[in-house]
Structures are given as structure tokens and as C-alpha cells.
Length: 144
Image 1: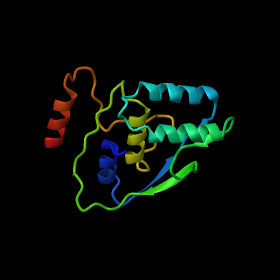
Image 2 (image 1 turned 30 degrees about the horizontal axis):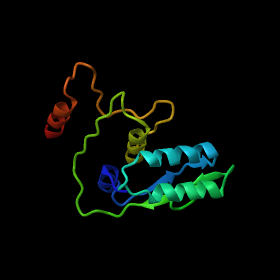
Image 3 (image 1 turned 45 degrees about the vertical axis):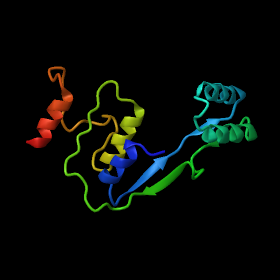
């Protein structure tokens, strides 16, 4: 699955290595049932190979923790190849609706240069409620 995350991460972390942590899920009949129920809500033409693989893995490991990552390990190092040319300026807008995935993305691209312990991920530029159009503001900021 490729998303904007993968496009940006190659530009922002070109030539670096990223330490990723994975998650483990407790294999329970409830979790399996929820995945099966979710699968039934999908369009009949939607691919379900990943869901089927997870269900089979959970069924084979009831009562145990299961790691769905490709590596199967709790931590893995991802080497980002060096790209020929990266953008000089990138603006990432985050507000109160920004979820944990976006925060993790910021964590990856900012560390180790900026500590987050006890203060969270601090913005380079704080936009308060007086800024009505964040995108317009960001574009002007980058252009100046």
C-alpha cells in the first residue's frame, strides 16, 4: 500500500534510516469476528487477501499476540534511499484534528534533531485562531 506518506518520506528522509516499531494484536474470537464483519461490509469486488491472511493468522494463534508486519519483528530499520533532488521547502499543517499517524510521521521526519520528551512535537511556526486560511498562510510563508 503506497500513500502520500511514502512519497513524502522518501523526500524528507532521503539517505537516512528510520527505526520503526510495530504493533502486536491479541488474537481473540471477538477480533476475528469483527474482521469478518468488516469484510462483509466491503464491496464484493474489493480485494480481501490481506484481511483473509490476518484472520487465518489470528485463528492459528488464538490467545497469543500476533504481529502483522512483514518483518514479524517488534522493531525494524527501514533504509530510505537517497533521492537525486528533494524539495527545498515542505510545509506540514497540523491542527487539533491531527491524529496519531500524522504525529508519528512528524516524529519520523523531525527526529533526532528535535527532542519531544515532555513537550510533544512543537511546530516551527505556531498558527493561532487569527489565521483563517492555513494553506494560504503556508504558501505565502514558503514563498518569502
